Image (cartoon, rainbow, N blue to C red; front, top):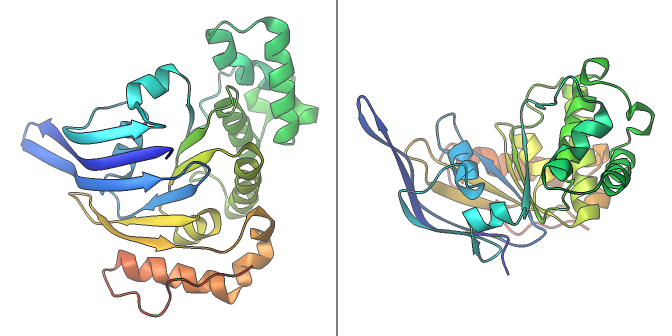
Length: 266
């Protein structure tokens, strides 16, 4: 069963200046365990599509399913976790208490909450910071807490809207490698919104390239650079990586992508 199925989805917003179509006739299937990035110019509807999947908004037409359920039912069943560009941590709660928050809201007992939070703290490498507060953490560490919180309920799907956009380049690259590792270890599918072509290629199995508004899928670029063990700093200097970056860039600009599909390295 696919993690996400989007069929003929259109989203139109009513504004004072008239109706604005953000997305038009989107068709997309994302497999369980697959990492897919959405990329395109500002205003192309990337975040809108993510919000529709997350049941934070509703399509104007078309159908959308998450693990075969409506988006609303998937939300109620806690099938996905969400992370945004801002970590959104509660400043008065410690790292552990922030990670425990969704579990607490859903009635999990104190001992079980703590055990799950400590498991995730170790997973994201923050074992020495469990009792610290957000203002005692770097930006990258705060994002690791936010990602751990999004994983708290063991979701089968992660929805991420530019979670590393506010980080410096070195921290961003470290977090990309960390996310690839976490996705591999948890088996979660990931839908990831970004403006960065190298980031999309480094992280993804496929990159969905969207057109300017109204957002349509212009092209889907297969990345096929191997599993998590290949997604290291060395990959960023690999000829196959540059090939995929060029493929996405040409797709964004509307130029034909010739002679680059199907490249796979092991």
